Length: 225
View 1 (cartoon, one colour):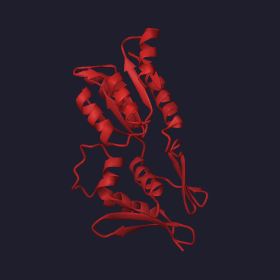
View 2 (cartoon, rainbow, N blue to C red):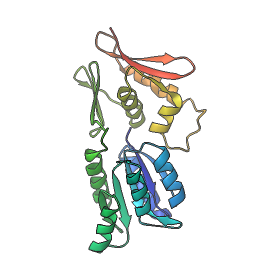
View 3 (tube, rainbow, N blue to C red):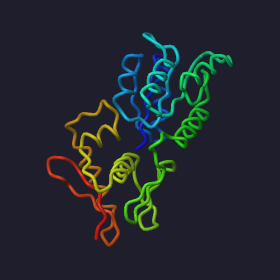
View 4 (cartoon, rainbow, N blue to C red):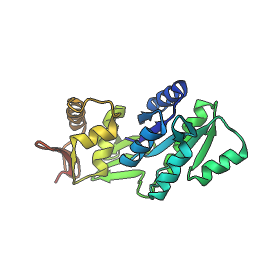
């Protein structure tokens, strides 16, 4: 699942952005200040960031500069109440990929995020395959032997992450971090429930993917023979 980080101190703006993006099917982490936002951005692999310029203890542009110095090429959208061309230039020079003034239309916000995700980072691949399974990250669709799978948002997120790491063991904690927000209880059985549902939707047969349980560790997606 595509995972985003929002760093915004204005509660009404942050909650609106998070709500809109979650309704679009993204997993969203939230931070209210520079310190927490930078720590999350440096320790997690996000598909895109939404950064407010003015934060209580710093500046969103400084988060962008730090990430670029660390060679983190995650796409960044800057939010600001300032709409002058010079402000946009400063944000782009700091390493941001796009710039959106407040207040904004949610339709435009969604379009800007989709545009950033199409650019992606240097290692992002928008179409993933494992045997006869094809997962498209942009359209959030999965095809099995040419037939579209009917998946919930979270089922798609789990499947996407397993396909991205096919033939590798994926831990429960990695799935939890990638698909759910950081507030999720790590002892929850939510992952096992979603994996069980996915298994029921994946057909057995030659070239079909299979989710195996690695006891005490996690899961592995492989191609059946």
